[in-house]
Length: 251
Ligand code: NAP
View 1 (spheres, helix red, strand yellow):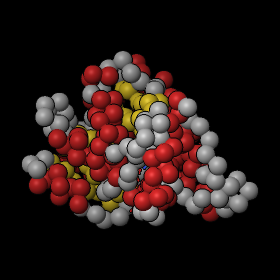
View 2 (tube, protein in one colour; view 1 turned 90 degrees about the horizontal axis):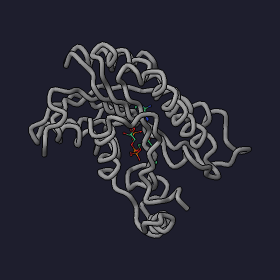
View 3 (tube, rainbow, N blue to C red; view 1 turned 45 degrees about the vertical axis):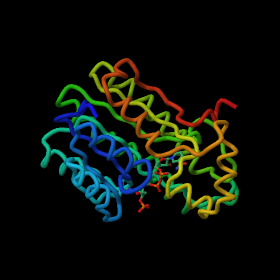
């Protein structure tokens, strides 16, 4: 694979599983040094990258805590000296319950990780990109950032919020050569989806049936969109919320 990210450095939050892991591996395959951040100590992604000859390090980081996020960026600069790309991907689905049954605890926790987490990451990543005069950020939103989903009020609110934050940061830093986009995945086969389906084939098929394309997406297919949005191939694209969703929201 062409090393289009040679000598570049990428942070991936929520990099231990799912879309984050696939994207961390994709960055490394293209030559980037990858900082894999997650709130649980899990070195599998880093080990997989190193085994195939890539460079990566793990940093324990809860994205909802500013001290963790500043330390993540500090450790990145300490080890690799720069930051070129960031995939702000860490997210939780929260507890399913409709708007009147959603608890304050679920609301606060979901907002803390999915929305405050993305803001905190951009707050500390962008200054480093400004230093090198260029950068690209991708925030993982969801089709739930574009349309409503009954029984997921906090999740849907955070993902719509991520789309708004993305557009705002894109406008703020467009002239400084920092592009900020969001990716809005449809139903993707990851541990998060497994929690919705309980890994039951029937439940999985129900999600696949809701996809006009007739199947679930793969984390690697989302990672491909992230790679394109970070690469110079998308140099005129910023402030976009790109659906990678098998046409779910086209319905
Ligand atoms: P996943 O398999 O659950 O992976 C998410 C990763 O983020 C996990 O490693 C998780 O750790 C980590 N994480 C959770 N909270 C964190 C925190 N506070 N700080 C740092 N890391 C944290 O989920 P995924 O499906 O890959 O989802 C990735 C992103 O895509 C999320 O933002 C999700 O909302 C979005 N998305 C997913 C789908 C889908 O169908 N899968 C669709 C649309 C959007 P633990 O596992 O240890 O908690």
